[in-house]
Length: 415
Image 1 (spheres, rainbow, N blue to C red):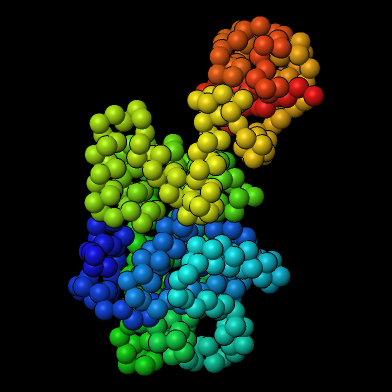
Image 2: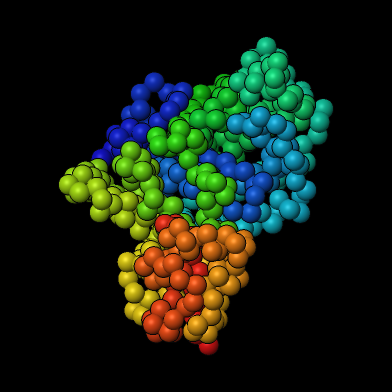
């Protein structure tokens, strides 16, 4: 079995570290990783971090997962060009409850401790904090932090004292966890590096002990050059109510060839040999998208359960007309209804009206233009006629699509 240090290096998961040799990781101790509570669901960007935690746990490390119930009341300025909108305590508590469920599912069977930093931050007294924490930080050092210089620069939006102080609060977290949970390593994204160093520094100054920090690089798409996990519609969520399992699967199946090997390393537990074999098979005929299929199925099953990948894979085949709708099970039809607009119609109904009612066209004029240009497909076949025939239905159902994207589809059914 590959050593943890070698495995993380192979997967490209080490960006910054305070220890000189990666082999330091091969002697398990206790680490912590903090998660923001500003939303009620994690994203696939967070998923990369959670799987990093899983790799440490599987290598024998004890894990403390910190929900940011306290720090989220302040707002993390890292990676933000403008001030965050502050959340109230009740909203943050609801967010933590939702995120806790996601973490529990992803960490099922793993050994870890979950805590909320509101439990120790809420009772801090301001004067005590200034004396016990603030005195250990130089203003020269803090003003040089990247997130401060960017916000304070000529075209910056400015930064509040609250967000400016966030780094000290996160440093306090590390000191508290060192004292109460024997934590000696903080793990986080590279955009958190400055905040992580605050904790390393505070523990050294207050306790005379050396603790460490390890950051992983932010995942950036080689295809687009932008931060991973974003799309035109926004983030790709782990919550199935925000991003359905099929949409989730589709995100991965559409991975560019330039990114797919990296994503197999970061987002799956496939071994180095298994990934090598997948890529060898994939490069023989990239049009089959074997690597993307393996990636999509593995990650969807990880997040949505063992059946999630199979169901999403099969539903995708119906939505892209690879498989006829008459072969779909009731469960698959039910999933399709959740994914796309659906409408009860009668044979002979105008396709113009159907396109407008299902939202595939904004007006009858646009619907006629789409039909005339060959952009409308019924069960995968381009049509240019305005009436729907009985022969268009397979088992009482038909799939209408505008263009090539499955998301621009509608299910129509006979009553």
